[in-house]
Image 1 (cartoon, rainbow, N blue to C red):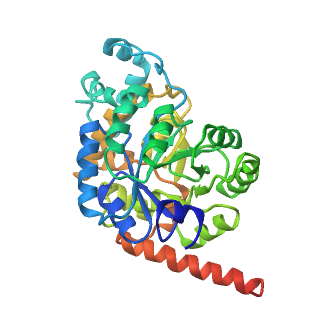
Image 2 (spheres, rainbow, N blue to C red):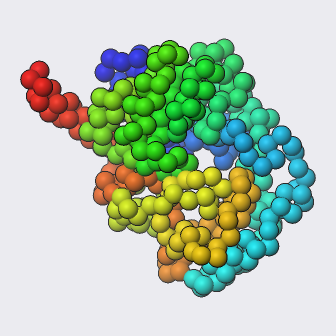
Image 3 (cartoon, helix red, strand yellow):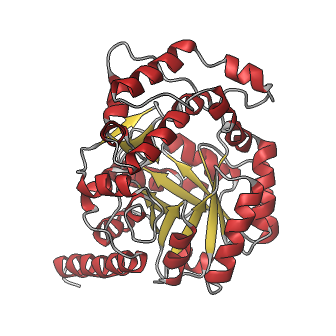
Length: 380
């Protein structure tokens, strides 16, 4: 295809795949799309290992890296001591999690402050110093795009992007956010509707894409990638008809053969419909869309504690969710009922486990068919 994003990144088809799995990154890029590795939970050393592997297997095709450096979170401008962070976690929340687990016959061994300590490094990645360490690793590899979620990219990201000739993308969920990003100098806007898995706003992709496309025209022609619930080529074509230059996808890769998604979660995703997701703060402290389960239902019940702000809520939820995932894989019924994962409303269109390349090729074919139907409708 010949559009600005394809020319900018030297790709054949403007289908972007956000994933935590290096195999998916490689297969998407080799099939003509653009793989993006989610690195927010990695240490610099882990990221270097993953990118080394990608470089050896991607045959020179372009790829990118995605980080999370939010504008606001608890302790952003501080470096609180470990004991101070743990002291911020209310006993009410710890007890609530323990009660949920015990109600599903899951023992609470290992869901404690020792497990929470292991997660504190992720909070460091949200701060500028930690993010900069990851940026240095990313820019030491031949990446073509660096993306930031939950805020305007920090100055080092924008500066290093310009220095290395790497496009800087930013995820947005509101018109005002998009204008701030364009004014800051981002190269690509990922316009993320509420249908998306993971962190998302409250406005539909169908509304948000044309709204933001029109709003940013006075600030320059920054290309848009549509995100949120997109699992087919016809949806991609519809978004491009509204002004997007391509699609940013995530959920659709979770059920591919190459994905490292837990087998239990894959099974639940393949069986789920579009109404089997919920937008909740219970996992990270910010609203994120995930698979509805007994875990998410518990946090919605009257009397459940209000989720804490990021990153404190993750220290409450993740030790329990890691235990749930491990037990669910061994066939534990209570754990299987509790098991959840980030996924968008497009899950209702994800009905079979296929190879990554087959998903890309299906996107291309479906896109062309949709384009031809539209052309025929207007007599072209």
